[in-house]
Every structure is written in structure tokens, then in C-alpha cells.
Image 1 (tube, rainbow, N blue to C red):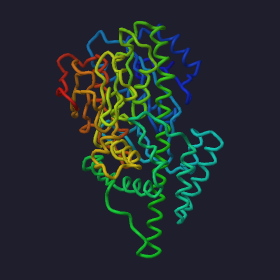
Image 2 (cartoon, helix red, strand yellow; image 1 turned 135 degrees about the vertical axis):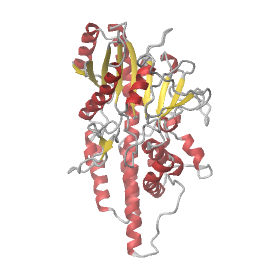
Image 3 (tube, rainbow, N blue to C red; image 1 turned 90 degrees about the vertical axis):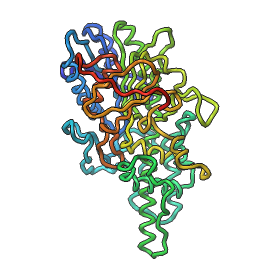
Image 4 (cartoon, one colour; image 1 turned 180 degrees about the horizontal axis):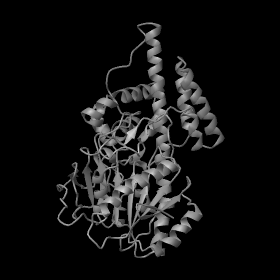
Length: 464
């Protein structure tokens, strides 16, 4: 066991099927009761994380939490941290969180140039022989960029080798990446990526240009044709990026339900007095939310609080009735396993979930439907919060000491004034290292600020 600024700190690793590392699990269950922990925060990372990066994420965020706890009047609650590590992945050509950045600066920086090809590097999380062969061939096609459209058809077929497209009704949009016309997919993803900077500055998904200007044709001769081909292959690469994220999104749900849920049950049995608080970033928000499905029902909620930071899964997941289908979301009926309001942090500056996430889901869109309707259909938690759940809404401003009040099952927190820094294509997706967010997580857990310093967040009744 280690510590983070004096907070007891454990990690537990899960495999892709949700099976935990037995040694780490036993260490947690054996040591936790003797450490006097009253509140255990269980944090899950999202995509783009190695175990080392995940550890840095937990240390950076809970250093902020520890600083906030240090301002509380005695007696202070004894807080512990459990970091969830699961087999996510990182594209080597993407930015990673900058853990050395000052609190007032951006939370992401450009990744160093990698010698390894970012596509073949994905073999680490797609180990089957057929998947490895598919990744080798796709990497070759991306390097060569053939002008023959048959190569794009082949590329799409190879993507499908990486995984299935079965998903919950509210969260299956990305299946279009391997089912729609390959040219439409490549062109649409190219447009979306090119429009991301304007989406970040002007308001997110509404301006991603999914129905924007046509790509150039070959009327200008060989140069124009080459430009068209290059843009289409860039779009194909982005389609692969999003489809592999789709596989990680599915995996997060499996690990949450089959792995973290049962572990939470074991923790409650080993240390009955400990209050459990789930926190997740990106796909980690999906993981900790799906842990609710792996918990037994009962008269008393098993989880004290649940906070999602820039969640990368459907904003309809908790809906009892989907607006577009006569059924509920995958987590319908499970919110009552959380004692307090479920807090959903979102930001318009997160273009990973505000632009690229819906763009991937729109690959097989119905042209008769309006873009705004389709963006709502395939929207993510981290863009506009939980939908169709009668959520309350609030805003988070720089310097706020929020107080999460009772009265609503869900609270959508617009953190756009705080979560706003980061380069394209992901924008502010990883910009989560802020004292205001640490305070929000503590407030959701009913651990308040110093006496007289708390200012309630602005909460408005009704649908967010």
C-alpha cells in the first residue's frame, strides 16, 4: 500500500473480462479495515491510459483532494483512495495529460514523437492473431494511401475484425463506422476532425460541420485527386481511432459490471463502515456507472456518491424511457443504488465527446433527420450531462466551493468555465485537474469545505 499526500492509496488491476489481480484485491480487503478509512474514493481512468499514466492521474487529482481536506476543521474524515486500472489503450500520436502543468494551465500537452506506429501499437490491447494481422495491414494501407477506393472498402472490413458492434440501444451509434458506405465514413470523419478547432471555440458539437462543404473533387487534376485521397485516408484513420475507442467503451462496461461491482460488494463485507464513492473520467465514468449493475439490490444504497468527469458514453444511459425507442437505457433503474445525487460534469470545450464522439455515431445517419436531432440522439454525458432523467442543473465557475444539495437524483454541472483547456482533437477532455472539481467530488460525498467558505452551486429545478 502507498499513499497520496497522506491518503491511504491502493490500486486494483482488472483484465478485459473484469477479473481482478488476486494479490492486489486481497491486499485491499486485508489492509482497509485496519487503516481507519471512513470514506473510500474509487477512481477509474478512461481511454489513453497506461497503468503508469493512470497512477499519475490518481496522484495528481487526489493531491488536490488532500489539499482541500487539509482546509477542513477537525475532526477530518479519514479518506482513502482506490485506483482502478483496466486494459485501456493509448494512441501514440495523441496528447496525454500533462501532470506537471500548473493548476491554472492546460491539462494536456503534445505527446512526444513516437518511433512506433500508432496503429500497430494497438496490438497490446487487441491480442488475437486475426486482430494483429488486421492492424498490420491497416497500418500499411495508411502509409501507402492507395487511390483505389477498393482499399478503403478493405480498410473498413479489417476494422470490423477488431470487435463486434453489439451494444445497448442508446450507445450503439458507432457501429455505422463498419456498416455505412466506406467513402461516407471517411469523408464524414475528415470533415469532423477539420472542424474541431472551431467546435472548441464556438460551442462544440453544433459546429462540427458534419453536413458541411463537400470534400474536393479531382477536377483540378492529379494534385486535387491526391488531396482528396489524403483527406479520405486521414478520415479513415480517425474512423479507426473512434472504432477502437468503441471497443474500449464496451470493455469499460464489462469491467465495471463484472469486476468493480463485485469488488465493491467485497469491500463492504470486509469493512462495513466504509462509505464508497465512485468517480470516473471519460470511459472510466462508464466503468464506475456500470459497477452499479454488478451490485446486489437492497433497501440501502450500496454507493454513497457517484461523480462522472467528462463521461464518454450515452447521455441516455440512465433514462427509464429512451426518446427514440420504447425501452430504457442500459442503466435504467440502477440510480437508486447511489445514496446522493449522481453528479455529471460536462463542458462544451470537450471536443472528444462533443464533436468526435457523435461524428462517429453519425456515420450511418438518416439524411432525413436534422443534424441537431442526430447530435442529441448520439450525445455523450461529458458534452451536455445526463438526459431524460429530470436532472437538476448547475454551473461551476472558477473559485467556486460547490455544495451538492439534495432534491434531485441527477445533477448536471456545466463546468465549461473551468474545464476548457486542451488542443484538438480532444479539446478539454483531460482538463480535470482543478481545485473546483476536487471540491465538487468532496461535496458529492457530503464532505464539505471550511466553515463559512462554502457557496452553493446554482441549482435550477427541472430537466437539464
